[in-house]
Length: 349
Ligand SMILES: *Cc1c(COP(=O)(O)O)cnc(C)c1O
Image (cartoon, rainbow, N blue to C red; front, side):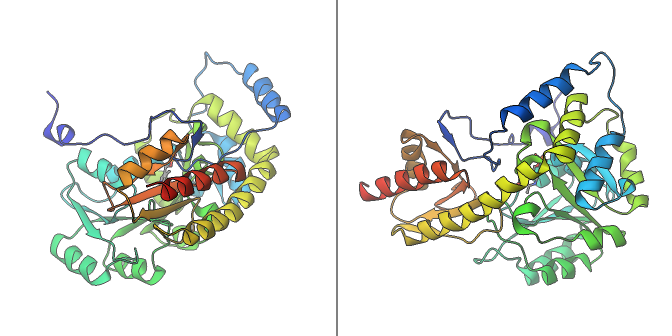
């Protein structure tokens, strides 16, 4: 029957409520031009869907390598970086050695560890959302985990942890995963370490830059490490349509994504500024494409529900951080709708 490891899991949470404006999953709000959609349609119609895809997704790897200045042998592709998190929790260290990560953070680190029966060593972030180094060192010395995850920038808090603290933890002989799902919004990276060191890998994703539906994530690391982890990869983990569309987008239409990323960064700074002017809201700076804020005048559950009534869906994080909500930065009109709705709610509590 179902193991206790699985029974005790809580399923991955997403917002399923319907709303015309969806700012809940940190996707890039982008509508591809018709000529791009037609091109995608043409490419898809040429595929032999009766055949298995290339298990190594060689052409897509080449496109990723070319686009991001990497080498094919340093890449491992996943069905989203979520899958790569599973692989890392499976491949790194023995299962009687735990997995360390600061919380609150992305839930997959804990879920993957728990499924495998690995101990989870969770240390609460300080009030400024940076790592509590002395507590981390204490717990690591006590528990001796093998693996550490750092979302960089962190989800849902939006900040990048201090580089020195990450390195201090890594120095305690922990294999270190730097999850850079929001790299394009922060431009801060551990890529150099991932290419040089045998104790560090970087995770990247196409999900937050306009292609979440394709489910493409990639790991960057030393060739020897990548070829070991590649042994546990499911043979055809990236589908044929995803391989083809992702390659097309990276090779020919990447500038369209880039422009939208730049707009989203400017919008992030505007939304942050507007939120910080509002009485009844405490807002946190962000290096990602989302913003965490606190509702000071009414419970977050009520603010969340009233935003849905106004047609705007964001993510309620009050189960993790008291009174907190996270809004994804959308296009200007979506952000305006969100800001107007929240102002209206604050004016009529
Ligand atoms: C969204 C997110 C991911 C998931 O990325 P996929 O490539 O879509 O699986 C990974 N890590 C963090 C921190 C995220 O916020």
